[in-house]
Length: 424
Image 1 (tube, rainbow, N blue to C red):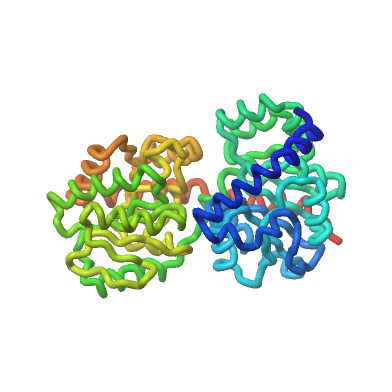
Image 2 (cartoon, rainbow, N blue to C red):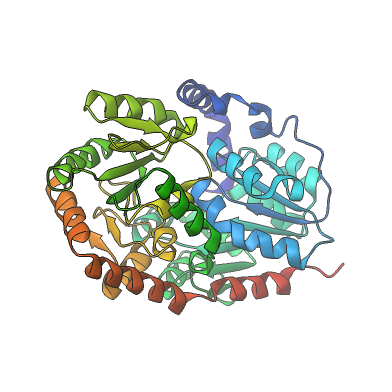
């Protein structure tokens, strides 16, 4: 399939695209807002001539945050425009940066929508986070002489096979990229094999290692636990859970309570549209549950705190003694393991970590990641870590050592961006 056939198919799929958007809006009302932006209609007023950063969803927005902060500091004279595709990503961007950046949804990959969007912002440089590749957006940038960088680039073996099947479409697209800053040499070679120019592929590592945690965060979390009179209670968090995982986590928590009756679970569903359903699940399962969004205090009889807020995940991690990271008991590929590791938390996950294989391998090898398969494995490891604080502390130290050993990717990436950014 070449780009013309892809574009034709994309237009033929417009009714399905609209129906899917409406279905998402039905499940999550935030999708019903700013629909015009997805078709390059009603875009906000933008200053031109700056840097455009695309972070498709919440995870990429969080990963891009340190880079965006550095771009704002290093190029204060240039406007920075940040786009995404999801309401959670949008809310996170606005919470992190407010009016320091320009923001809208990235229009769908129609040539006319891309042209209208690029006319609105006329960027000097485009930076796409991870592997959000859109043939028409990239081609339009190349035609206009706008360098496009794939930052923090990752490409799993499965994704590479998918791209290889569409080589006539993907090879020309990859060849138009000015820089691919890959996380690992293995991924860099996959990009080369798919058609990226060898001289444009560099291994910079993952900028997710370059996160910094404000020391005041842990101080604030410690104070809140004292306010709850929960400083001595064993607390664990199950974060970024997906459908099918909450039941496993709650069943494990029930068994944990059998030996640690004061244990508190902080349960944080990945998607806001699931908050209410997970709250009702906790109630049906008989757990005394409080909702973070209502700022309800944790009481002696509280057994579950539902993390139904946005932008607070780091703080919720800080409240816990150990962390299970979701999206991994179901074949979703996992979520960011480095945030709880940076806070000094022993880590648990399921076996499905194909989106974070290199990071998981390093954490596992250092001793700060225990993988579990089911309810039995999860409850056994949680109870073991509660019973063995010295082991938990050793795991936490191991995770911090992995982060420190891998920092520096952000500096390499920024150096690459500086080489491509026109001086005028």
